[in-house]
Amino acid sequence: MANRTHLVVMPGDGIGPEITAATLSVLQEVDRLMSLDLSFEEAPIGFEALKKHGTTLPDSSFEAGKRADGVILGPVSHNDYPPVAQGGLNPSGEMRKRLDLYANIRPAKSRPGLPSRCGKPVDLVVVRENTEGFYADRNMFVNTGEFMPTPDVALAVRKITRQGSMRIAESAFRLAMQRSRKKVTAVHKANVLRVSDGLFLECTRTVAKRYPQVEYEEQIMDAMAALLVRDATRFDVILATNMFGDILSDEASEISGSLGLAASVNAGDEHALAQAQHGSAPDIAGHDRANPTSLIGSTAMLLTWLGERRSDPRFTKAAILIEHALDRVIANPETRTADLGGPLGTRAFGACVAAALTA
Ligand code: ATP
Picture (cartoon, rainbow, N blue to C red):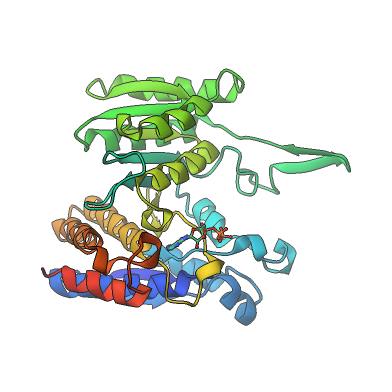
């Protein structure tokens, strides 16, 4: 496998197997066109793995992902899993934590011909810290950040570190430098969380000073939720701690068009994982109705990450080809999926995007 780029595909639950299959059909075609020399390996997670291996994230699947050049992770129904002691691990949280995928990059971008919910084209990116914050299931070394000192008191610890805040701020400013508007908005609640968001802002301001070409502003989380609805076009890169970033990115994707379009990549210094922003959509699973744009777009982001890391323009170009193909297919109402009012199923949509790569 010396020069090959090895990708591990974890189909997941609900619509996961359908959208990963459609994504693979696009990837195989772009591989053929751009001679990327990709190899693929499927690794089970979720209910399929629970049945076969007694856990929703078998060690063999995690190790395959760790060895790979990149991972494509389908959505998972982790809310329905049994307790951890009975094998119910959240594959998404575990992969982020164990591979130190600290940056969750979540673009919200309107597609041509598909109006955004605010009437104007939206093009912003939420850069969300991915390993600490309010996420009690992954923010501690041993056990979780949630506990009950008495049967009637439940506590959750929010963890903010200097290292975590500095590196996510760096990611946001580096990304802003690649974009035409060059603006970063740091989101916080330092008026209430004075110590923890105080530390977060101290770090974002330190990093901001290193990037004088980037406009920097701060917004309080609740005001930010309202400002996004009022006019999402005033934002470029939104820098946020874990939970605030999670909430704002769903809001931003909905405003930009639909959750079914929402791509994301989870990146660290050594590993990257493509993952749609949405969940496993059990209400439409198995009906060939899901929109795979989210995972196809996430995979394009993974190719961009690989291209930058290796300074290999083939990967960057492949990602641009996929993005243009998605734009072309979604622009035509006759080649949209049901969530966007179109007639195509998941498989047919994937085939259309693959065909549009050569257009
Ligand atoms: P989970 O429990 O896994 O989070 P959920 O249904 O609570 O699942 P989502 O999966 O995010 O949450 O789905 C929210 C809504 O958006 C559902 O009605 C779902 O059908 C729809 N949806 C999500 N993803 C897609 C998609 N790719 N294509 C079409 N509709 C989608």
